[in-house]
Image (tube, rainbow, N blue to C red; front, side):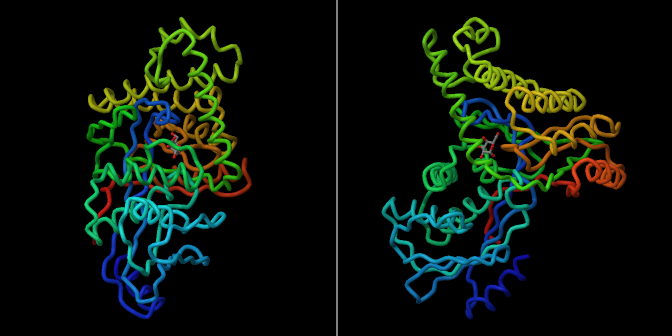
Length: 383
Ligand code: GLA
Protein backbone atom coordinates (compact mmCIF):
# COMPACT_ATOMS: atom_id res chain seq x y z
CA UNK A 1 0.00 0.00 0.00
CA UNK A 2 2.82 2.39 0.95
CA UNK A 3 4.36 2.30 -2.55
CA UNK A 4 1.03 2.64 -4.33
CA UNK A 5 0.14 5.67 -2.20
CA UNK A 6 3.56 7.24 -2.80
CA UNK A 7 3.15 6.69 -6.55
CA UNK A 8 -0.28 8.34 -6.47
CA UNK A 9 1.16 11.14 -4.36
CA UNK A 10 3.79 11.89 -7.01
CA UNK A 11 1.16 11.87 -9.77
CA UNK A 12 -1.18 14.06 -7.82
CA UNK A 13 1.22 16.68 -6.42
CA UNK A 14 4.08 16.51 -8.95
CA UNK A 15 6.70 15.88 -6.29
CA UNK A 16 7.56 12.98 -4.03
CA UNK A 17 6.18 12.18 -0.59
CA UNK A 18 8.87 12.29 2.08
CA UNK A 19 7.10 10.21 4.75
CA UNK A 20 4.23 7.73 4.97
CA UNK A 21 2.26 6.69 8.06
CA UNK A 22 -0.50 4.25 8.98
CA UNK A 23 -3.12 4.13 11.74
CA UNK A 24 -5.67 1.34 12.21
CA UNK A 25 -9.44 1.26 12.67
CA UNK A 26 -10.97 -0.58 15.62
CA UNK A 27 -13.72 -2.92 16.71
CA UNK A 28 -15.19 -2.86 20.17
CA UNK A 29 -15.56 -6.37 21.54
CA UNK A 30 -17.88 -5.36 24.38
CA UNK A 31 -18.71 -2.29 26.48
CA UNK A 32 -20.90 -0.20 24.21
CA UNK A 33 -21.97 3.37 24.97
CA UNK A 34 -19.94 3.08 28.14
CA UNK A 35 -16.92 5.28 27.47
CA UNK A 36 -18.75 8.60 27.96
CA UNK A 37 -20.20 7.15 31.18
CA UNK A 38 -16.77 6.54 32.68
CA UNK A 39 -16.82 2.74 32.58
CA UNK A 40 -14.87 -0.19 31.14
CA UNK A 41 -14.64 -0.90 27.41
CA UNK A 42 -12.83 -3.61 25.47
CA UNK A 43 -11.82 -2.55 21.97
CA UNK A 44 -8.96 -3.71 19.75
CA UNK A 45 -7.23 -2.25 16.71
CA UNK A 46 -7.75 -4.01 13.38
CA UNK A 47 -5.42 -4.36 10.41
CA UNK A 48 -7.66 -2.21 8.21
CA UNK A 49 -6.86 1.47 8.57
CA UNK A 50 -5.73 4.74 7.02
CA UNK A 51 -2.47 5.53 5.22
CA UNK A 52 -1.10 9.07 4.91
CA UNK A 53 1.74 10.20 2.65
CA UNK A 54 2.99 13.75 3.09
CA UNK A 55 5.59 16.29 2.09
CA UNK A 56 6.16 20.01 2.67
CA UNK A 57 5.23 22.28 -0.26
CA UNK A 58 6.14 25.82 -1.30
CA UNK A 59 2.55 26.98 -1.85
CA UNK A 60 1.85 28.52 1.57
CA UNK A 61 -1.18 26.24 1.86
CA UNK A 62 -1.72 22.77 3.26
CA UNK A 63 -3.58 20.60 0.77
CA UNK A 64 -5.67 17.53 1.56
CA UNK A 65 -6.47 14.83 -0.97
CA UNK A 66 -7.80 11.30 -0.59
CA UNK A 67 -7.98 8.31 -2.87
CA UNK A 68 -11.39 7.59 -1.32
CA UNK A 69 -13.08 10.93 -2.00
CA UNK A 70 -13.18 13.30 -4.92
CA UNK A 71 -13.50 16.35 -2.69
CA UNK A 72 -10.18 17.92 -1.80
CA UNK A 73 -9.47 20.70 0.65
CA UNK A 74 -6.86 23.24 1.62
CA UNK A 75 -6.05 25.63 4.44
CA UNK A 76 -3.65 28.56 4.76
CA UNK A 77 -0.55 27.40 6.59
CA UNK A 78 -0.48 28.56 10.20
CA UNK A 79 -4.01 29.94 10.24
CA UNK A 80 -6.81 28.33 12.20
CA UNK A 81 -9.44 27.17 9.74
CA UNK A 82 -13.23 26.98 10.25
CA UNK A 83 -15.16 23.79 9.55
CA UNK A 84 -16.32 23.03 6.01
CA UNK A 85 -19.76 21.47 6.21
CA UNK A 86 -19.63 17.69 5.90
CA UNK A 87 -16.24 17.13 4.27
CA UNK A 88 -13.82 14.38 5.23
CA UNK A 89 -10.89 16.82 5.47
CA UNK A 90 -12.47 18.47 8.52
CA UNK A 91 -10.71 15.75 10.53
CA UNK A 92 -7.15 16.67 9.50
CA UNK A 93 -8.00 20.38 9.59
CA UNK A 94 -9.29 19.93 13.15
CA UNK A 95 -6.03 18.25 14.17
CA UNK A 96 -3.86 20.95 12.59
CA UNK A 97 -5.98 23.61 14.32
CA UNK A 98 -5.23 21.91 17.65
CA UNK A 99 -1.46 22.02 17.06
CA UNK A 100 -1.73 25.68 16.04
CA UNK A 101 -3.78 26.50 19.16
CA UNK A 102 -1.00 24.92 21.21
CA UNK A 103 1.42 27.45 19.71
CA UNK A 104 3.13 25.26 17.08
CA UNK A 105 3.97 26.33 13.55
CA UNK A 106 2.74 23.83 11.00
CA UNK A 107 4.35 24.43 7.59
CA UNK A 108 2.46 24.12 4.31
CA UNK A 109 2.12 20.41 3.55
CA UNK A 110 0.76 18.20 0.80
CA UNK A 111 -1.13 15.25 2.24
CA UNK A 112 -2.62 12.24 0.52
CA UNK A 113 -4.83 9.76 2.38
CA UNK A 114 -6.13 6.32 1.60
CA UNK A 115 -8.30 4.21 3.91
CA UNK A 116 -9.68 0.68 3.66
CA UNK A 117 -11.86 0.94 6.76
CA UNK A 118 -15.40 1.10 5.36
CA UNK A 119 -16.45 4.72 5.95
CA UNK A 120 -19.15 5.47 8.50
CA UNK A 121 -19.52 1.79 9.36
CA UNK A 122 -18.74 1.90 13.07
CA UNK A 123 -15.11 0.79 12.64
CA UNK A 124 -13.75 4.25 13.50
CA UNK A 125 -12.68 5.49 10.11
CA UNK A 126 -12.79 9.00 11.60
CA UNK A 127 -10.59 8.21 14.62
CA UNK A 128 -8.21 6.50 12.21
CA UNK A 129 -7.87 9.68 10.09
CA UNK A 130 -7.51 11.83 13.19
CA UNK A 131 -4.83 9.65 14.77
CA UNK A 132 -2.85 9.07 11.57
CA UNK A 133 -2.75 12.86 11.08
CA UNK A 134 -1.86 13.68 14.68
CA UNK A 135 0.73 10.90 14.88
CA UNK A 136 2.31 11.85 11.53
CA UNK A 137 2.60 15.57 12.27
CA UNK A 138 3.89 14.93 15.78
CA UNK A 139 6.58 12.62 14.40
CA UNK A 140 7.43 14.50 11.21
CA UNK A 141 7.71 17.90 12.91
CA UNK A 142 9.09 16.51 16.21
CA UNK A 143 6.38 18.22 18.25
CA UNK A 144 7.00 16.12 21.36
CA UNK A 145 3.49 14.96 22.31
CA UNK A 146 2.94 11.55 23.88
CA UNK A 147 0.29 9.20 22.56
CA UNK A 148 -2.26 9.97 25.25
CA UNK A 149 -2.00 13.68 24.48
CA UNK A 150 -2.65 12.92 20.81
CA UNK A 151 -5.65 10.79 21.79
CA UNK A 152 -7.10 13.61 23.89
CA UNK A 153 -6.45 16.05 21.05
CA UNK A 154 -8.31 13.84 18.58
CA UNK A 155 -11.25 13.54 20.99
CA UNK A 156 -11.38 17.35 21.27
CA UNK A 157 -11.55 17.56 17.48
CA UNK A 158 -14.46 15.12 17.43
CA UNK A 159 -16.30 16.91 20.26
CA UNK A 160 -15.60 20.56 19.59
CA UNK A 161 -14.83 20.82 15.87
CA UNK A 162 -16.91 18.01 14.34
CA UNK A 163 -19.67 18.29 16.97
CA UNK A 164 -20.10 14.66 18.11
CA UNK A 165 -20.00 14.25 21.91
CA UNK A 166 -18.20 10.92 21.65
CA UNK A 167 -16.08 9.36 24.38
CA UNK A 168 -12.41 8.49 24.18
CA UNK A 169 -12.61 4.79 23.25
CA UNK A 170 -12.08 5.01 19.49
CA UNK A 171 -9.07 7.30 19.50
CA UNK A 172 -7.55 5.36 22.40
CA UNK A 173 -8.02 1.99 20.69
CA UNK A 174 -6.57 3.26 17.42
CA UNK A 175 -3.53 4.76 19.17
CA UNK A 176 -2.81 2.01 21.72
CA UNK A 177 -3.87 -1.14 19.85
CA UNK A 178 -1.45 -4.07 19.75
CA UNK A 179 -1.41 -7.12 17.55
CA UNK A 180 -3.53 -9.99 18.94
CA UNK A 181 -4.43 -8.06 22.10
CA UNK A 182 -7.66 -6.55 23.37
CA UNK A 183 -7.47 -3.36 25.40
CA UNK A 184 -9.40 -3.22 28.65
CA UNK A 185 -9.72 0.51 29.15
CA UNK A 186 -11.12 2.27 32.20
CA UNK A 187 -12.57 5.41 30.63
CA UNK A 188 -12.62 7.23 33.95
CA UNK A 189 -8.97 6.87 34.91
CA UNK A 190 -7.69 6.22 31.34
CA UNK A 191 -5.67 3.30 32.66
CA UNK A 192 -5.67 0.27 30.43
CA UNK A 193 -4.51 -3.34 30.36
CA UNK A 194 -3.82 -5.55 27.37
CA UNK A 195 -5.46 -8.96 27.31
CA UNK A 196 -4.39 -11.76 24.95
CA UNK A 197 -6.96 -12.21 22.21
CA UNK A 198 -6.39 -15.91 22.10
CA UNK A 199 -9.46 -17.04 20.18
CA UNK A 200 -8.33 -20.65 19.93
CA UNK A 201 -10.48 -22.39 17.38
CA UNK A 202 -12.48 -19.22 16.65
CA UNK A 203 -12.02 -16.16 14.43
CA UNK A 204 -13.51 -12.71 14.70
CA UNK A 205 -15.85 -11.92 11.82
CA UNK A 206 -16.96 -8.37 11.06
CA UNK A 207 -20.24 -7.96 9.24
CA UNK A 208 -21.03 -4.58 7.71
CA UNK A 209 -24.77 -3.90 7.36
CA UNK A 210 -24.00 -1.47 4.52
CA UNK A 211 -26.84 0.63 5.87
CA UNK A 212 -26.44 4.37 5.26
CA UNK A 213 -26.21 5.94 8.72
CA UNK A 214 -28.51 8.95 8.43
CA UNK A 215 -28.79 11.11 11.56
CA UNK A 216 -26.48 8.82 13.54
CA UNK A 217 -24.58 11.76 15.03
CA UNK A 218 -27.66 13.51 16.36
CA UNK A 219 -29.08 10.26 17.79
CA UNK A 220 -25.69 9.58 19.40
CA UNK A 221 -25.68 13.01 21.03
CA UNK A 222 -29.24 12.35 22.24
CA UNK A 223 -28.07 9.19 24.07
CA UNK A 224 -25.20 11.12 25.70
CA UNK A 225 -27.75 13.68 26.84
CA UNK A 226 -30.09 11.01 28.23
CA UNK A 227 -27.27 9.56 30.34
CA UNK A 228 -26.49 13.02 31.67
CA UNK A 229 -30.14 13.42 32.63
CA UNK A 230 -30.04 10.09 34.52
CA UNK A 231 -26.86 11.15 36.31
CA UNK A 232 -28.38 14.47 37.34
CA UNK A 233 -31.44 12.76 38.80
CA UNK A 234 -29.37 10.21 40.72
CA UNK A 235 -27.19 13.00 42.06
CA UNK A 236 -30.15 14.20 44.13
CA UNK A 237 -29.42 11.32 46.51
CA UNK A 238 -25.84 10.24 45.81
CA UNK A 239 -22.73 12.08 44.67
CA UNK A 240 -21.59 10.52 41.40
CA UNK A 241 -19.27 11.68 38.66
CA UNK A 242 -20.52 9.14 36.19
CA UNK A 243 -23.08 6.36 35.90
CA UNK A 244 -20.52 3.56 35.85
CA UNK A 245 -19.54 4.27 39.45
CA UNK A 246 -22.73 2.42 40.42
CA UNK A 247 -23.16 -1.30 40.89
CA UNK A 248 -26.56 -2.57 39.84
CA UNK A 249 -27.52 -3.15 43.49
CA UNK A 250 -26.73 0.44 44.41
CA UNK A 251 -28.50 1.71 41.31
CA UNK A 252 -31.64 -0.24 42.30
CA UNK A 253 -31.72 1.66 45.63
CA UNK A 254 -31.89 5.00 43.85
CA UNK A 255 -33.54 4.26 40.52
CA UNK A 256 -36.92 5.50 41.85
CA UNK A 257 -35.51 8.99 41.17
CA UNK A 258 -35.78 8.28 37.44
CA UNK A 259 -39.45 8.28 36.58
CA UNK A 260 -39.12 8.49 32.80
CA UNK A 261 -39.03 4.95 31.41
CA UNK A 262 -36.71 5.77 28.51
CA UNK A 263 -34.13 7.39 30.78
CA UNK A 264 -34.39 4.48 33.20
CA UNK A 265 -33.77 2.02 30.35
CA UNK A 266 -30.71 3.94 29.17
CA UNK A 267 -29.18 4.00 32.65
CA UNK A 268 -29.98 0.30 33.20
CA UNK A 269 -28.15 -0.60 29.99
CA UNK A 270 -25.10 1.41 31.00
CA UNK A 271 -24.79 -0.13 34.46
CA UNK A 272 -25.38 -3.70 33.31
CA UNK A 273 -23.14 -3.37 30.26
CA UNK A 274 -20.31 -2.06 32.41
CA UNK A 275 -20.69 -5.12 34.64
CA UNK A 276 -20.65 -7.39 31.56
CA UNK A 277 -17.27 -5.98 30.54
CA UNK A 278 -15.78 -6.99 33.91
CA UNK A 279 -17.08 -10.53 33.35
CA UNK A 280 -15.98 -10.56 29.71
CA UNK A 281 -12.41 -9.54 30.61
CA UNK A 282 -12.22 -12.38 33.12
CA UNK A 283 -13.72 -14.83 30.63
CA UNK A 284 -11.15 -13.87 27.99
CA UNK A 285 -8.31 -14.18 30.49
CA UNK A 286 -9.52 -17.64 31.48
CA UNK A 287 -10.06 -18.78 27.91
CA UNK A 288 -13.83 -19.13 28.53
CA UNK A 289 -14.85 -18.14 25.04
CA UNK A 290 -18.35 -19.55 25.23
CA UNK A 291 -19.09 -17.39 28.24
CA UNK A 292 -17.59 -14.44 26.38
CA UNK A 293 -19.92 -15.22 23.47
CA UNK A 294 -22.99 -15.31 25.71
CA UNK A 295 -22.03 -11.91 27.12
CA UNK A 296 -21.82 -10.59 23.56
CA UNK A 297 -25.38 -11.73 22.86
CA UNK A 298 -26.59 -10.20 26.14
CA UNK A 299 -24.88 -6.94 25.24
CA UNK A 300 -26.68 -6.87 21.90
CA UNK A 301 -30.08 -7.50 23.48
CA UNK A 302 -29.54 -4.62 25.85
CA UNK A 303 -28.42 -2.26 23.08
CA UNK A 304 -31.49 -3.26 21.11
CA UNK A 305 -34.16 -3.12 23.80
CA UNK A 306 -32.89 -0.72 26.47
CA UNK A 307 -30.52 1.60 24.64
CA UNK A 308 -32.33 1.43 21.27
CA UNK A 309 -29.30 1.93 19.05
CA UNK A 310 -29.53 -1.25 17.02
CA UNK A 311 -31.99 -1.59 14.13
CA UNK A 312 -33.47 -4.12 11.76
CA UNK A 313 -30.23 -4.67 9.84
CA UNK A 314 -28.01 -5.34 12.86
CA UNK A 315 -30.71 -7.45 14.52
CA UNK A 316 -31.07 -9.54 11.37
CA UNK A 317 -27.35 -10.34 11.48
CA UNK A 318 -27.40 -11.23 15.18
CA UNK A 319 -30.57 -13.33 14.73
CA UNK A 320 -28.87 -15.28 11.98
CA UNK A 321 -25.81 -15.82 14.17
CA UNK A 322 -27.96 -17.21 16.98
CA UNK A 323 -29.38 -19.80 14.60
CA UNK A 324 -25.98 -20.73 13.14
CA UNK A 325 -24.24 -23.18 15.42
CA UNK A 326 -20.57 -22.43 14.61
CA UNK A 327 -21.11 -18.88 15.98
CA UNK A 328 -20.85 -18.64 19.78
CA UNK A 329 -21.51 -14.92 20.17
CA UNK A 330 -22.39 -11.82 18.17
CA UNK A 331 -23.34 -8.21 18.71
CA UNK A 332 -23.40 -4.80 17.12
CA UNK A 333 -20.17 -2.85 17.58
CA UNK A 334 -19.60 0.91 17.81
CA UNK A 335 -22.29 3.56 17.98
CA UNK A 336 -24.95 1.48 16.20
CA UNK A 337 -27.82 2.80 14.01
CA UNK A 338 -26.41 0.61 11.24
CA UNK A 339 -22.67 0.09 10.91
CA UNK A 340 -21.12 -3.25 11.79
CA UNK A 341 -21.71 -6.35 13.88
CA UNK A 342 -19.04 -8.77 15.08
CA UNK A 343 -19.26 -12.52 15.59
CA UNK A 344 -17.07 -15.23 17.11
CA UNK A 345 -17.06 -17.90 14.42
CA UNK A 346 -15.55 -21.37 14.50
CA UNK A 347 -12.54 -21.69 12.18
CA UNK A 348 -13.26 -23.55 8.95
CA UNK A 349 -16.81 -22.15 8.61
CA UNK A 350 -15.78 -18.79 7.12
CA UNK A 351 -17.07 -19.47 3.62
CA UNK A 352 -20.24 -21.23 4.63
CA UNK A 353 -21.05 -18.46 7.12
CA UNK A 354 -20.54 -15.76 4.51
CA UNK A 355 -22.70 -17.54 1.97
CA UNK A 356 -25.57 -18.37 4.31
CA UNK A 357 -25.59 -15.03 6.07
CA UNK A 358 -25.49 -13.18 2.72
CA UNK A 359 -28.61 -14.94 1.48
CA UNK A 360 -30.44 -14.60 4.79
CA UNK A 361 -29.65 -10.88 5.00
CA UNK A 362 -30.47 -10.16 1.37
CA UNK A 363 -33.87 -11.89 1.66
CA UNK A 364 -34.85 -9.74 4.62
CA UNK A 365 -33.12 -6.42 3.93
CA UNK A 366 -32.96 -6.22 0.14
CA UNK A 367 -29.23 -5.55 -0.26
CA UNK A 368 -26.07 -7.37 0.75
CA UNK A 369 -23.98 -7.15 3.89
CA UNK A 370 -20.16 -7.28 3.60
CA UNK A 371 -18.28 -9.87 5.64
CA UNK A 372 -14.61 -9.72 6.65
CA UNK A 373 -12.50 -11.98 8.81
CA UNK A 374 -10.62 -9.55 10.95
CA UNK A 375 -7.10 -9.58 12.26
CA UNK A 376 -6.18 -7.70 15.41
CA UNK A 377 -3.45 -5.25 14.49
CA UNK A 378 -1.02 -2.65 15.83
CA UNK A 379 -1.43 1.07 16.54
CA UNK A 380 0.04 3.88 14.41
CA UNK A 381 3.43 3.54 12.71
CA UNK A 382 5.76 5.31 10.34
CA UNK A 383 6.23 3.05 7.33
C1 GLA B 1 -18.76 5.69 18.90
C2 GLA B 1 -18.04 6.73 19.75
C3 GLA B 1 -17.35 6.06 20.95
C4 GLA B 1 -18.31 5.17 21.72
C5 GLA B 1 -19.09 4.25 20.77
C6 GLA B 1 -20.17 3.49 21.47
O1 GLA B 1 -17.85 4.83 18.31
O2 GLA B 1 -17.09 7.44 19.00
O3 GLA B 1 -16.80 7.07 21.78
O4 GLA B 1 -19.18 5.92 22.51
O5 GLA B 1 -19.67 4.96 19.69
O6 GLA B 1 -19.65 2.60 22.40
